[in-house]
Length: 611
Ligand code: M6R
Image (tube, rainbow, N blue to C red; front, side, top):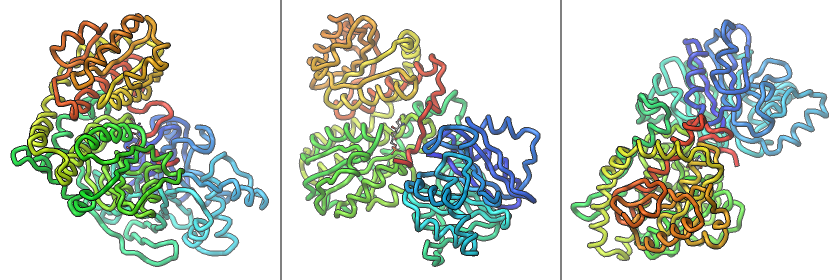
């Protein structure tokens, strides 16, 4: 949550910082602000999105070759101008932006108040900033030293960027638990929560690690640990093109990302799936082949949509690998005292690779001797780096806050991992595996076909957009698909939606069914088909409005639907990758119909880097 940007060099900082903030708005958009350093230190900030900041800076003095900027997802203090970052220290000499949460800010705040400080905002950030300045003044030390001393007292997570008006071309940055990337230019440096703000200027980046501090000047990048020892920055080459983070003619990133899925699934399978030889190559996890062969238990940890991918994979793993599989919300797992045995496999699933709960859950499991395999989209992200091994999903940057292409890519990777383990353990026959691999290879083309049915989906979206609630039902492999469909609708259109296992309906949710309630039933042909058709009958009998996700030419299912969305036939194990597509589109078009900001739904942020 929260996006941070910084620049120091010879160019004007403001346009670079503003452009960077627009790219990072997916991380939060409660307020935006910049601090610019030229002869004086100037701060402009405003509640709302970057566009609101641009309005208030029109005609203002915006010069300066050093600048920092922030787009906020509020934690401490409501979204307001007052609580917007950057914050200024009591002396007005330091400006700071922060992503994360200072957990012991209450205690630090009290110390400052006892010393006579008067704080202007409700944020933990302003507390930390003044705490740093207080240490600097008291100890007559450098800002760098004051930051080091302060951070040793801090509990919580942070990326902070500071400008000191006494060091006009320097940005000091530090990180723990929130992401920070530094781009290396020629006589200039860029800072960001991810690499998107620096893509058009440089491909050379350094990912700063926890407990590291960076002193960034135009010509120099000094990296140190909190013990003041100098570290050698590890420079990596970015493999992302600018076009990947632009809308490319689509009205929204979400729509672009939905339509990218034939390609992203294909990219994810490429070089890994060999249907002709009946094999899977996942070089990232090959080194753990023995451990995977012998494992008794796999625990998947994730949040949100990634958790739904894990839940779908649970069915596939059980079927193919005959293993104990547990799927856990990372946010719950991290606070339990889970039984982990050395050699247990933890599969951490995350698009961003930065989700705070997933990160801590991994840390805990790692400390207990588990082997951590990451299924991550963002290359070089914290989870990717913290995992022992893993497989990237290769879906490319996902910018729409609602996850779409990352989900199908996660399913593709998890399916391949399950097939690989099944083969290693001999729990799946070569004949069945070969058939599945051919089917998997055909998935991108089938997704393409579904995407050509967009007109009927738009019509259905119009027809149902005014409903107050939705129920989503599915069984077996399609139960997590129902959960994911409901989550997409909630996020994008603010309509209350619940996902449920179809057969559980009669244990409670059936009480909700009346002539007003749209019930989306994922009812494609699989081993539960007849049972799900019976559930549809039960809804119809109570006048519920059934919207079916059904297999092409399934007339029996079609008869039970008030509206239907068709998908090509597929093996039930692979069907979720298809069945979720019409649900993504339905949520998208209902959101658009209702005039919602589908790329930036209220209260949400793309990377949940606070717990
Ligand atoms: O980046 P991650 O996959 O770890 O994120 C997990 C969730 O925050 C994420 O899936 C969230 O639920 C999305 N908004 C879903 O569309």
